[in-house]
Image (tube, rainbow, N blue to C red):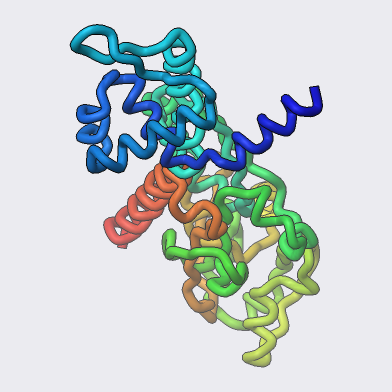
Length: 317
């Protein structure tokens, strides 16, 4: 038994991938010359490969019967498993294809809540007919997770407004936006909020996301010597808007979000005395996904949604 194991180990050490390819051609054509032509070898090189295979497998493989060559029983038995093995080996070096019509793949997306409200419905509308089996998992926005070493292995796409937020990720602009002052429809001071004294007396909702010490709007205002009156702080823009819709509070939030929820919540945009700079949202993906067909397909659809948002903004302007 030990001797047999030793022989098997020696045979495996003597084998290489080129010999397997040559063996497949020989078993398919039962001819040294035709097999050589099939894989682009000279006839002497194929004859040499056959000699090596006979030694390794301890079988003649091809034997002459009258005017032609025929496969031995051992060679006949090798044909199917060899083809299967070669396909598996090729799969190690060829990227998996992606057919959206049949794929059951799951993609993990990390998206802020206000962007979810803008992109998810049109993205799903694009995918419904083309990829009915694909599933999107939108994960919570977790500040600590973004710094973990294994974070790139657990996410397919990330959306963020900071262009340098994810070193080592690829990045592309998704769409542009700007902050606006949201108030409920019928707010008694809506038209007067353009005056600085009314703006400063108004009761504001601050949106302080995970990992932040203050609302970015306040960072911007304080740099200009403006200190607004904060009556409430919440962790998300959607919570701010739901509160504003049912009170006389006001809140700086992304302007697109006000527009998308204006009918549903009864919101309007008021003109503030100062206008924050415009923002851009960026699409990020880990380097491992750069050439992945499935990720490429999903990015294409997400970027198309972003272009549609920009076109809508231009038409509204």
